Amino acid sequence: MEITESAKIRIIRAALGFRVHEFAAKLGITTNTLNNWESGRTQPTGAKREAWNKLCREYGWGYLPSGMPVPMDDILAPRQQSDPLPSSTRFDNTSSKLTVLASSRS
Image (tube, rainbow, N blue to C red):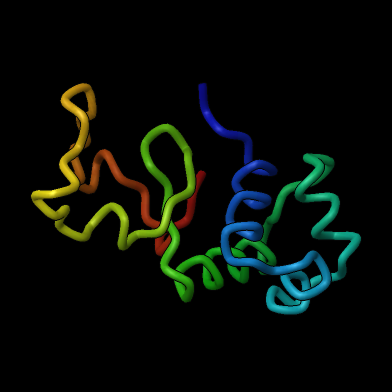
């Protein structure tokens, strides 16, 4: 099940610790626009999509193949021996399996 665009936006905003008005200001949009994105009524397009992608790159966020937004450091950083992945976890971090917000999503 793919994560909705509105959920991705809410997850990233919450993880970064921004309130709606703060996040909207960072993006150069109104709080109404951000509320519409987070509720799924509209999605970022055009220059607003570019601003969203730029903000995510600046804060180091990308998407797993499932669509789940995650900090890129969590994906790319080597794990410590004391913190191994569960045996059921498999992740291929090749470019075909990992979407980085530096590129536009269709």
